[in-house]
Image (cartoon, rainbow over all chains, first blue to last red; front, side, top):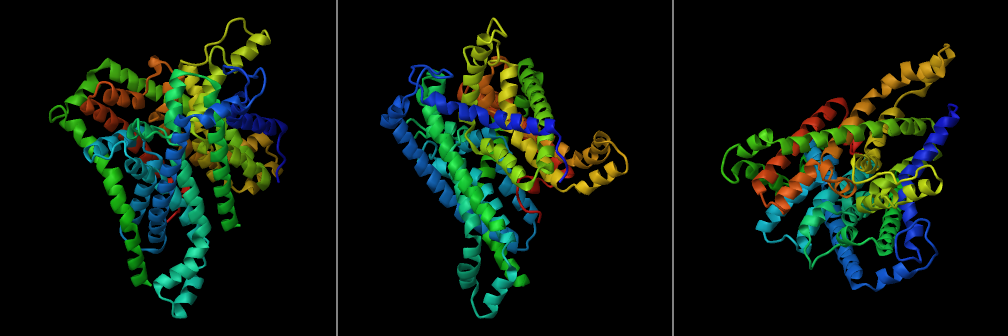
Length: 259
Length: 279
C-alpha cells in the first residue's frame, strides 16, 4: 500500500461528514421537545413520533407507499430477471442498444419521464391510480434489477448448466434447479433496490398521484411547503433509516454473491 | 449452443414491449405534441429561440449545471483518489458513505439542507452564537443554496465513474516514477492524472447531464431567479396548461441530454459506469 498523506485522510473524513451529516442531523431534531425545528433541540421527547404514528394521513401514505413499492419490486424483478437472462445468454441483433434502452431511465431527466407518462396515462385513464404509479415506477426500477441479476449471472459457472443438460435436464428444469438458486441473491438485491426506488420516488409521483392516492414522499412534499414542524423530521428519520437498512441488506446480498 | 442462444433472446421481449409502451411511447408522444400543439409546425421552438425568458432559463440551467459539475469534481476527485489508495476495507466504507446518500430520498436530503441553510438555520445560528457574523448569511433561496444542495445530491455521479477508472490504474506506475526520482506531486501530475482523465470526462459529463434535468432541489433551495429547465417544463404544464410549449421545452432538454450522453459514450462505456455489463 502507498502511504496516504495526512491531509488526504482528513479531507476524506470531512467529505464523509458533508455526505452523511445533513441526514444524521435530522435524527436529534426529530426527537425535539420544542414546537419548532431547532438544532440543538431544547430537550428530547418522542412526541413527534407519536403525532406521526397516530396521524391517519401519514399512516395511509405509508400503507400506499408500501403497496406501490412491493408491487413495483415484484414486477421489476420478474421483468428484469428475464431481461438479464436474455441479455447475458442470448445472441441477437441490437443487444447493446436494448441494454442502453433498459438502463436509460436512470439518466433521462425524471421530470420528462414524469410529464410524458402523465400525458399518456391521462388518456388511458390510469393517471392517479395505484396501477399507473406501479407501472411508471417499474420503468424506473427495472435498470437496478437488470444490473444486479447481470452481475450475479457473471458469477454462475456455465459448466454447471451444461452438466445438468448433459444429465438429461430440460431447459426449464435446468433453470429451476441450477441457475435460479445461483442467481437468487442477485434477484433479491435487485428487488430491494427496486423497492427503494419506488419508496423514495417523488418526481413521477407528483404527477401520478391523486388526493386519494398519496405516497409518503408526496405527503412530505405537501407539508414541506406549508409547515415546518418536527413531524416531518420524524418522518424523514424513519424514511432514511428504512432506506439505509434495505440498502445495506441489498449490498450485503450482492457482496456475498461476488465474494 | 447457437440455437439455445437464439431461444434465450426471446426472454427480453416482455421488457421490450413494456418499455415501448410505458417509456418510449410517452416520450415520442411528447415529441409529437411539441410540434402539433396548438398547431402543426415549429412555432413552439421558434418562440423558445426568440423569447428572452426561455433563453434566460436555459442559460440559468447551463450555468447551474456547470457550477455543480465544477464543485463535484473539486470535491470528488481527491475523494476517489483516496478510495483508490486506501486499504480495501476503508475503500469499502468510503464507497458506502457515497452510496447511502445516493439511495436516500432526495426530498429528505433537500429538507435537511433547508434546515441547515435557512436564515434561522443551524449554520447561521452557530455562526451568530460564535460571533463570527452579526447578521445571518443568505445561504438559500439563491444560487449558493442550489449549488450546495445539488453538489451534495450529485457527488456520487462524479465519484463512481472516477473510482471505476482509477481502480484500473496500475499503482506500480506511481511507485516506479517515484523510485526514478520524481517527487510525489510530480509523479501524480505526470503519471496518475493523465491516466485518470477518462474518468474525469465521464464524471463531469454525467453530473452535467443529470444536473440539467434536476427538479426538486432547485425548487426548494432556490428562488424564482434560479428557475431551471425542469421547473419551467412543469410550470408550463401544471400552471399554464400549455402542453405544446411544455413538451417543446422538454424536447430541448431531452435533445441536450442525449447529445451529451452520446459524447460520454465516446469516452467511456456508459453501461459499465452505471454498473451494467460490458457485453
